[in-house]
Length: 415
Figure 1 (cartoon, helix red, strand yellow):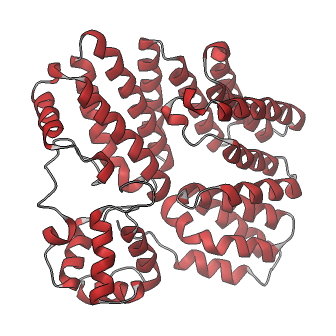
Figure 2 (cartoon, helix red, strand yellow):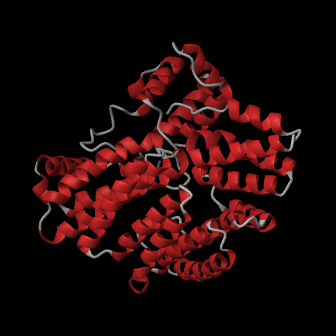
């Protein structure tokens, strides 16, 4: 990825070569299928994935790079700049925004050979890598990214153990942020034990360096993990523990903890307490939005749109279907298209709200455009859509077969 709105050079080259030699994106999908030795996904699924490649949203796997070269009668190196890209000693997605120059690449290499030589330039580069990978994960989900970030985390942990002097806290802070991100992605793929372990480790590093924002965030995220397991009591207790640091953390971090407490109470059916806490969280989020630069880097997604969606999800817990529909619809209208994973999740919540309200046609209308992303990127969204299908089945709705067929036909596209 290059500057906002500008794909990387390899992505622009894919589009130019495709238009010159093949014509449409659908034709490119058929061409890939023609030159493949093994079965590939459907033309429709490949078409959507090819568009993502051409926009630089994700990078083709080795399998697809070879198929592209074969289909376009060129070499993989020429098509994807493989010979031009400096060898990175640390695994990373091939994003333009994280490509170091030759001097920095050499410094990173020397640091890995002797971790005691860790310098601020290497730390800053790793901070950039983490920030860019967070943004990419919003679009492609956790599965294609988790292995790369786990390897980066292992390197950062080694650097944290060797760092001395004034830079030691910076590296420990980076390790905590990486651990928190790996925990989030582990939870996203349903590796509950790994998620809990890495949240605990991130919390420990945060306490070691006195970073109350990260310490609070990890408790909030453990509350989220409890919420996703349906444990209302643990959700509330962990969220309240996160609020112990209220006077020392930013408004956004406080707002996250407060809305997690609200979600726990909503899960328990305690409407008045949940809504009171949501009002408190909303005020904090407005403060955070007014001073966004003061919030930690990992809170980049946290704004009024995100909160509106969270509030809609909470009203869904409280069986207030009309309010949930209004809030989720408004939130989705403002959520960037690049947030594919989140759009699948909140879209599935909206479909469920419509289904619970008895509007089967609206439930189907919302479900169909997000089925593929729900199956590919967000297991929670997929499960929610399966629940919607069951609701339609119970009512013997005429829309049941259409949603069932869509879910059955969707499958994960290899990256």
